[in-house]
Length: 208
Image (tube, rainbow, N blue to C red; front, top):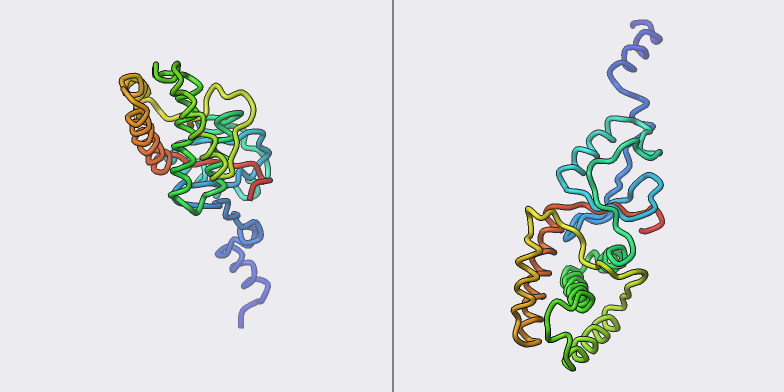
């Protein structure tokens, strides 16, 4: 038999013992319909990152044992979600395993966005009360709320993926509340599909 010390040293060259002791944690909380991950570093706001950038970022982190315990020196391009957009993401996260409810949440966000910006002239008439009522009932049914300044509630998307101008143009052209609701339903559905296929969301460590 060979020298045990030599064999042990040789095995250490083959098996990276340190990599086993510092196993890369599974930061994914949910994969579909939206992908949510724990950041793994101190995070003051939610982060929305292109899926392609997130995949490369995660690949690099896996090859740096122990680096996931501290904040990376530089993140790939991303959006920081605060105030209204943070409230929207919290509401989506609440229903992370129920796609139909998530889509209802995003439709509600679309209604709130339309109300905030008053894009359609209808919302400057008495009919605005009908939209207020619809928003109130949906918020109650879904058990969600928006906090802080509400300048923006729909999550950002790259303009190359979705034309905000065309969407707002369709909102302005709606001649009735029903048509307005249909445009918002269609637009938020398309946006939700883009968020699902193109983006990953990083959450503070306190969220599970």
